[in-house]
Length: 392
Image (cartoon, rainbow, N blue to C red; front, top):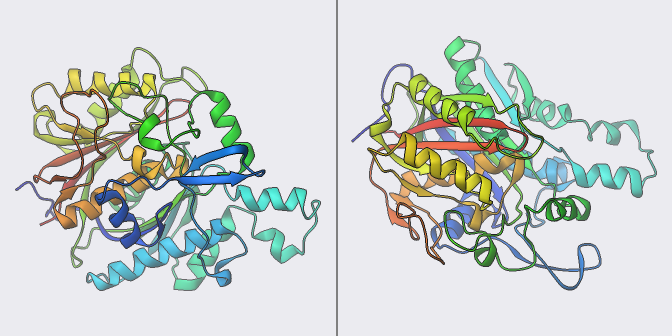
């Protein structure tokens, strides 16, 4: 067994989730382990005429006391579930608990309502809820945490970047523990329309018919929403899900949307992450891919497999056909699925539906202990990679 038991561990010791499957980690695990996409058909003039569109949208179900919007309710729920889960697994908060929130577009539904319904005018207290700093401030107040609290934003890489930053805080001795959250509930009609027009989002059919990473016939990604919470600690008292061994970030510096075709910076980011983690490429067992099902990302990650992991030939899978592409929360929901999978001894891979890369997993598969590399290729060139290991 490759495990993460050293004194400097940064372990994920609590997980919380709000996804298209529903509210809570049980709903997430039931969905992904069963191989059923979270997307359902949404009909009506708000999204589309005629046949409607497929979205993995977070359903209503939050606590109104956590804010007026699904965004604030989901963020608070996911963080709270992660904290409660960590306590149940033996975690006790240190004196300095920090909070990192990975977020890109923020509370798009509430901003939309502010402009279209309220005509740009609200009571000051209600207006304050729109600011990205408010959800993290209210969460810090709820739990009496006094470490640093901030948002991080790196498009689709934001969940990875938040987790890497959490480990950096721990390594630097800035905090004792970190609550790390990533939230994206941005499937307003306008945002959905623009991603479809971009040629990346596919909403006119069920996800497995369109989003086929590393398989023939893929047209792009299904669109999803999520808020994911983690508690990350290095003090070793709690029973962890996964150890965060290391990570790295880079930027293509190439294009506002496209991946640099030479893949140089992506490859460097993978190499830097392995070096930071002290892991050899030959020891990597799984590639938990970014895998949105677009041709350019498939090409980039296929190159990673062929050039960097030719010796170890890790199994590859992508969660996006199941969870949808959750934008700023994408990497976080995919790490949450891996963490829950580690607990259950299962890799919750989607089923294959077409001719596939020979290393692509076909449906839920018994997990073999080993290192997982998690790349995230954020739009605009935001590359990030985390290196994860079982705890035990």
